[in-house]
Length: 227
Image 1 (cartoon, rainbow, N blue to C red):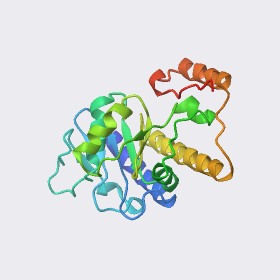
Image 2: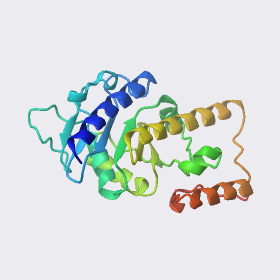
Image 3: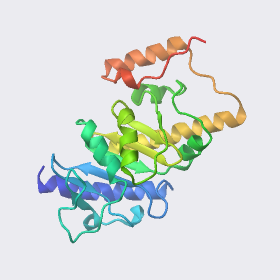
């Protein structure tokens, strides 16, 4: 990738940081995101920076092992290990967003999974949103824990922690974070006023057929219940 792409990515990351912070999804210094510039370099957020106040020059470039190319730059987030795990198992992914959306975290704390076929837009685009079992933030264990899930899914919930979304671009990964939080909000609201009623099996089958026609990964599909 050329320097124009790097400059574009820096400005895009600043904008995404503001959007995440303004929505309350990366309070204080939380959250992190990255863009794969080429097969050797990753542009990512530094540790200890508010994502709503980032400037293009704040972002740092690391190699595929997470080592900054310029030793004078700030250190990357300890959660970069998650991003490295994604890029290792998903050659189609160019960007990752890790955030702390409140409803998403609340659902994981309450044991509510976002895997039932309830929302047609989720079925069509993400299929289902599984929850990765808890592993401590900033550890290699968390990176290993996400691998079997992120192999087939573009969005996952991190138990008691937050969300991780991946895509071919940073903006698209951000929009998937929006989808996860919207799904968590709708499902938790529905549970507060009644019980969850999944879509009828025939409707789910129709939606999944449309998803497959657009190249959706069958391994990310929700289970069709006949009960």
